[in-house]
Image 1: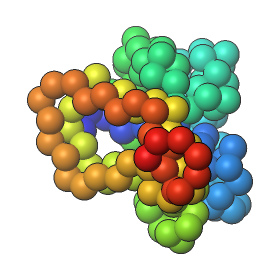
Image 2: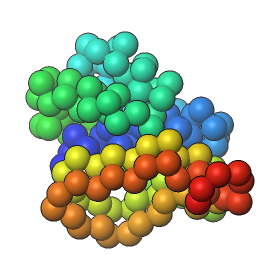
Image 3: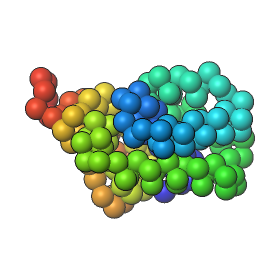
Length: 150
């Protein structure tokens, strides 16, 4: 997985956990560190805050990823380390906490991944060891026995 995709994915997953108040202080602390490091690296606080408010936004992810790319973040081992640390903390969440977050991708290699409007409280997209060489679009989703499509 490209390093910038890993960083932005961890940032979005951490934002989702923060918004849904899952993962406790450990996840929140690591997420806050990653968010601060991305802002410091890119100088794009508004873009990072916009992603924090709407972590499912493909456009928001793209803006942050482009800002990271322009800042040379591919070579930033500290950012990669914090992102990996956050992903590890999220992976250790209880199943009901993970379900509240929504997407559980595990590993994925792809170009232009789009996941949208995922609500969850049930699974709501899961995957393991995906290897794609093209676009992956997952839309709507809702999941967990609530109203709407699963």
